[in-house]
Figure 1 (cartoon, helix red, strand yellow):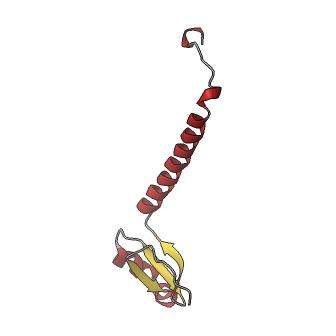
Figure 2 (tube, rainbow, N blue to C red):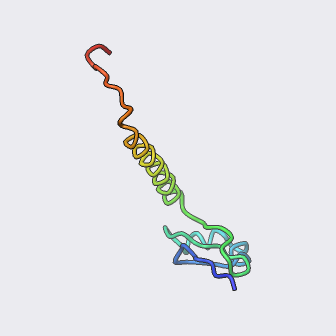
Figure 3 (tube, rainbow, N blue to C red):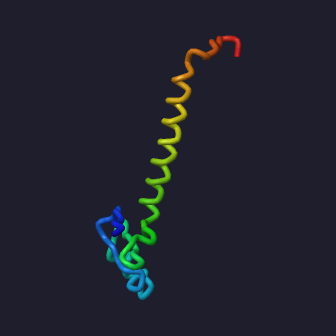
Length: 85
């Protein structure tokens, strides 16, 4: 048996979603909705506000990883005199 984690408080079957996607969006409000196909998540419907927050969080995570990587290499740092730049 395969069990999927659903990362949303709300879910709807694919057939119900296809009948009236606008109604699903209205009912969900600002909450994400898991769209299920054969009782397994096929995709998530999110508002533009939620999607923007996800994209920003991913960008922040990438920057955090870059900073950690560079801090780990600080023994290779080069001193720069800002008065001559």
